[in-house]
Image (cartoon, rainbow, N blue to C red; front, side):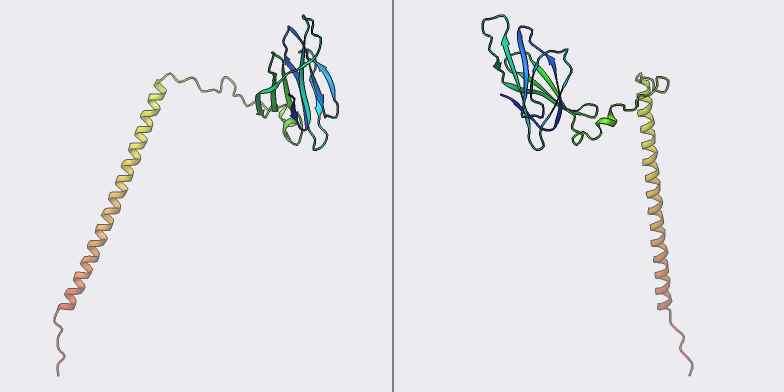
Length: 195
């Protein structure tokens, strides 16, 4: 059974079965062909017609026996990956032997950054800038420092809460005193006017 692809792909042989003669066939593409399964062969560029896919079929024949006919293999995907460096990569394996193809999508619409990703800058820190490995003491020191900082924050929060509570109580007392003074003033007898 063949595997169907759309767009532009590079197909390369990455593993073969030494006891068999193998090949892969592309059909429905802009460049249909039969390609021998040799790991030394350069990757083959295969692209589909617009809005049409192409198929990759894997075949084998026994080179030691008397059967010289080509037999189609059931093809299964054994891996799919999508990385910045390679884009979309699909691994195909023949079900009945060790024949493996690597198919990498090179369609710029699917991998628009692919051309710029080839020469990515190296973000590795130089050896002299890297932090030395922790030996356990640093972890304990970090935990102790974190604990002290947490305790300081909690103490500051308690002190702030106490100040706010004291301020509210003082304001309440002052309000109560003003209200009491107002009541006492209102309760004092007023002098009567003289006739």
